[in-house]
Length: 482
Image 1 (cartoon, rainbow, N blue to C red):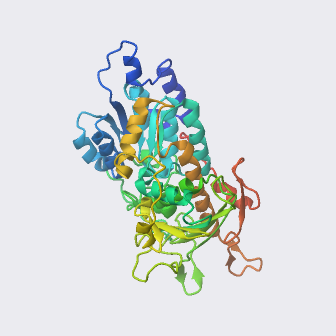
Image 2 (cartoon, helix red, strand yellow):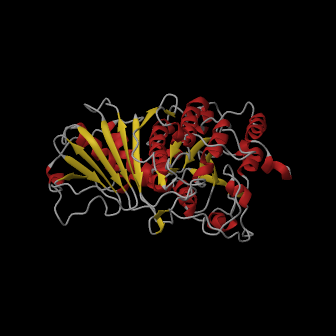
């Protein structure tokens, strides 16, 4: 690939890459074997993009399934890639994922994406357009529009997909479903989810300093789809989550882990409205700060879902972050922990309540003593190794091929879940935007607690136009459109 490839447009890349693999179909090796072809292995050949941090552990888990070969590694930061390169010394290493796909697409079957949120969608879409199965870390995308497009693409390109919310494969959510289906807590009308995240700085101004870019980092590639800004310290490895250009705050980090259980238990899909309020930061007495680049220090969003096939009426889903928690249920003993102490899920039904920790682990009926007293039939097949089996499930599903895979978080399910997480984020972001008072003295926050009506078919807020700017962002020139 030429040196100016970084400036190559997203559309031009896909066109070039598609021509390179014209006529090539990703077919499970066992199918080829049935035609007399003796496969060299039955392993899924994986290319990892973003191989530090969570990407490092994802690749290890794929490899530990015994059915995956980690053949290619790609990262914009040699510091973050160091451990994965040492663990997989035979894997060929790239900095630019576009170059990897352009040169090597005939030689791998699947792609694992674990970059910062803002680059998830373009990488995953590029892989799917080349017929590659994809595993994408949560949240699936940075924007609502991107989530919808990736969900559609999974079916269009007939690839096996999985989002990295491993709790979807855990035993806990299946136990919650069985209790609910058996009528133990009656009809659920309200769900609370909460977390102590963020555990990185938020509600702060963009740093003023412009230090030199570390020699191990390709800053332009790291920015990818995001607007160009000079390098600042502190974004890598994880504090980028608190900046809107790159991350999706506490919701993006934990929302897919905590909201998955309500989605699965109640068969939720798209909300009809959302409202939110946020924590404030005061820079001086009586002076509230506004930091448009940064997520607020805490947020509280309420989403409404219509009646589903499993409920008798609409459902209110509450999200709380920054340490905000719902009130303790009266039935919970004084010394018993809410959720896991930091995060949790609480279902309120007409006949009772049930609760779980992060990833829907440790499910309990309330009062907790009832958990051991109630027995219901197991209706839902458990994933081997539970949440830890989420990775092997995708590997095996990709080997089996599209239409033959049983997955816990395919894009068909993960897409609407991700959209909901990002819908709550949209409301939180809008709630934090000030407008000058008509008299010029101070500011008002018209988006705070405003009930915003959502048209899911057209992906639009119908009664507050200012909010729609956050449904779909503009990519930096040379990186789009999706």
